[in-house]
Image (cartoon, rainbow, N blue to C red):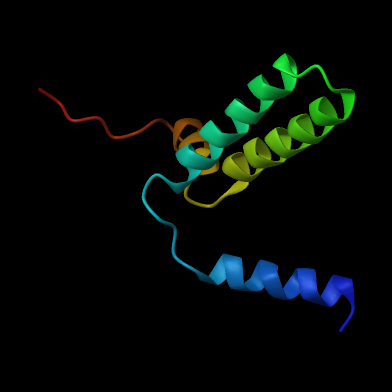
Length: 85
């Protein structure tokens, strides 16, 4: 099995599973914390590694079906249905 087939298999498994409540917010928070750690690090390699991992986690949080992309879609289509008083 090649690397590309393995990655495609993991993507299919991830797309088929249900989203956990707050999953994307946790991933977003972890990404932000890694970016903050990258900014404070003295080591060049640590800054690169933590920055790349933080950016990847933020991208993952934004691209999920139950996360920020769902909120953006709702806002673009006219907003969320807020309760009226």
